[in-house]
Figure 1 (tube, protein in one colour):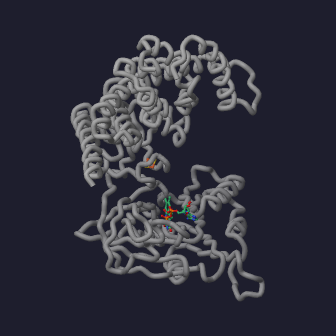
Figure 2 (cartoon, rainbow over the protein chains, first blue to last red):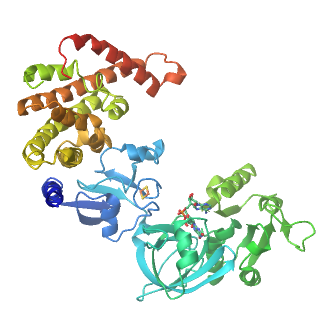
Length: 365
Length: 196
Ligand SMILES: Cc1cc2nc3c(=O)[nH]c(=O)nc-3n(C[C@H](O)[C@H](O)[C@H](O)COP(=O)(O)OP(=O)(O)OC[C@H]3O[C@@H](n4cnc5c(N)ncnc54)[C@H](O)[C@@H]3O)c2cc1C
Ligand code: FES
């Protein structure tokens, strides 16, 4: 018995002493004092040195998108460092292209703030905040997709551009012991500032979607941060071609609602791809928009429907009806939303047809 | 072996009993960081520094804590913890005062923690019952030997860049072959002193 106690005591003594030494070192050697971060040449922050740029900024309530939570794998936290970031790290090289390196792009989660640092971030990110909300509604709109309405608490209001997304926080729950953040496009209209709507599909084994689909209930509190993203409505008079599949409907719906609420008069065609009728949703909303928007047409295309089935709309992949409408490409721009495979195929097709790459906007889910 | 002169031990750990070329310990960073002479030298210095100090620290921990308490069997865990703590300390200091070296070493500095040469030296010291001065000489010598081997390999690899290595052997393959040849070369020294 005695040797058990003495073994534990000695081991604790040795580890305790080493831990003490390291804490002391962190306080002395690891203390970089207060360091200035200058953002876009005008805003100055004073933060405690030694931390990563990403966490230094988020502790000052400036949120940079960070889908992997700072592990250096997603590449979302890119920003421009003008001065003071040190040389590029091996971890960053995999996610930053040579052109970006030349332009000073770095990963905010990998570089540490140890000396005064000058960075550039899109002005919009100042608008990013953390929001607490409560689930007003969560319901199935297809067997695999849920529609969520989240009421923002404490008089908070969200300002976003139609097409942008938020990062929803899934806390640890029975099937996951870490908190994760995932991007979801806002489906509601920007004039509705007190709540947001999301359309969330179920991904087998997915951490966040399992939480949303199996655990989240009406009345629960959730938090999210945003808005992020540069996929949003661009104001001009070109004809709009929209293509989406599944939950890719979300940002497009937000754009259409925004166009309706500000009375925009543009021709607009929306091609929506689905497998069968079960995968179609919000048909009433689309019909309503067809009636109320200036010149809008909704074209659903079903890919898994047989010739004998009773369906009068387009059959086959969404690219087929799209091609029919692409005889004249002049003065058109495209908004695409869906899986990377679908987007890549459509972008290729549009470019082949002669559309200027700069007029193709997309979000890959 | 306790009567070995520390100076002999120092020389032997560089040449005849080289950590890499005779014992094959510390191979992962040896192969991964040996692309550039300057970085290899930096890592070699860091390894030498860590080796020397952890051997000394572990010597005291073993002699004055573990032996009196009859806890020798805990040496693996105690040595590993002390090495990990020491490396962390060194990392903080290097990050603060030698940023260029810190950048060059990147992820490899913390990885010294799991460099088996470091634990190997502490364990050899215990198994071979070295005195304090002997341990110091052995730790320091092993570090110098490791540095010499990695710098030599970096030099050879530099020459390799200009030679036509068969495609299937490029990278790891040719590096291992070269290491084997270096080890063969170093066997030539082995008649001088034997320490194990
Ligand atoms: C800008 C942006 C906007 C987005 N908007 C929406 C939206 O409005 N609605 C929505 O439902 N999703 C949207 N997503 C996708 C969303 O962010 C998540 O990636 C998705 O919900 C899966 O998260 P998860 O935590 O459940 O799965 P994870 O735990 O991240 O993934 C589990 C496994 O599933 C795989 N996986 C991840 N996503 C998919 C997928 N979509 N299909 C098949 N396999 C997958 C992963 O590779 C992994 O192996 C958006 C993504 C981006 C980048
Ligand atoms: S947060 Fe994902 S790479 Fe930085």
